[in-house]
Length: 150
Image (cartoon, rainbow, N blue to C red; front, side):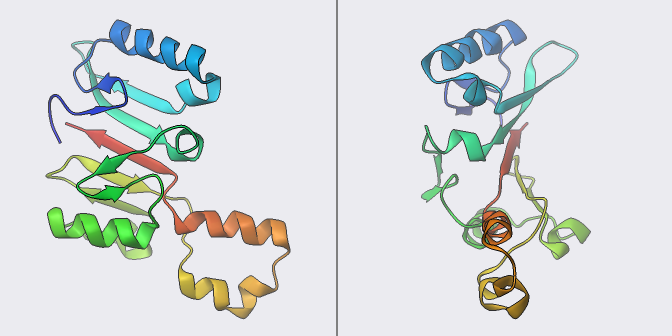
């Protein structure tokens, strides 16, 4: 993704002061949850080199499209297939287990703490769960964390 790419009002290479200014706008316009959903990492120069998004909160307020796919609304399996065509993901243990997919050329990665697939929804073990646990498990059909970096 590199320089100049942004998510909302935040861009890679912005200073910490610029990032805080835009997060204050989000905090006032939406709420604290939205502003806290942007996790920024800064380099020794003081500029942001990585922005991680907690998508659960953000997808209530924003749409995030990239190369024809709505990242906030698409299921994990669809994101993996779509992005793998653009930039093959790193085939490692995390991706093999279904937890994290990194697309190095694009500078994008997706993470989830558990894995749920469509087939799981039909499995006996899933059907035996109480409704609250089913809902909790189903949320892992999606990636809750998205990161872009240089």
